[in-house]
Length: 254
Image (cartoon, rainbow, N blue to C red; front, side, top):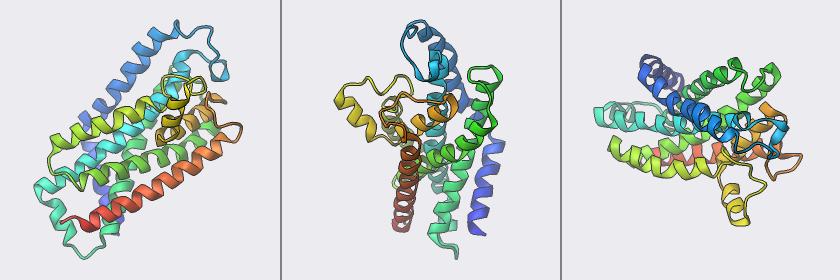
């Protein structure tokens, strides 16, 4: 019951905050329309997965961007709740702190998934990627794992920070390298060895690779034919580990 109540509160907060939805989608659409169109001619003649153009290649990476930003910054609600005293009230309530973390994580993951679905609908409607119901149904659990893992990261940082502005600065410093190393903008199989190594340490790399394989039919990764199962396995482990870390951080929070 406590998990559902906290999840529902996060959903109601998201639905009522229209500026949050528009703000989250504004930059991804800018990247997709302007940067994607501008670089499309530069990537002509380069072998991209599925024989697609650069805008289609870039689209799964932009979906990953929405999931990353929407998930991590959902941790800001924890900081705000701490400032206004709501977090203190639920911490002293007769519910386990693990339930609080799980409710926050599921709420943040759901809102990030909804934002990504809105962007994905634009991608399908405007024909950037052909619509496929089977691909969409397979992409949903992968997208949920991506959002759940990074929501837990946001909750983990939020449990240590009390200032919303400081949280946003720290998160921007944290997520920008994660995004650019994920292969959202360029194929990973042609990277130098040191960049490949860094990309392999990036959880979002596996999310973008999986989305690209599902939506385009192939991916320019270096994971081989079984890459999609590696992506699911890594993201499942990532979500589980970060959830445990977030719960531990909440247990220690005063």
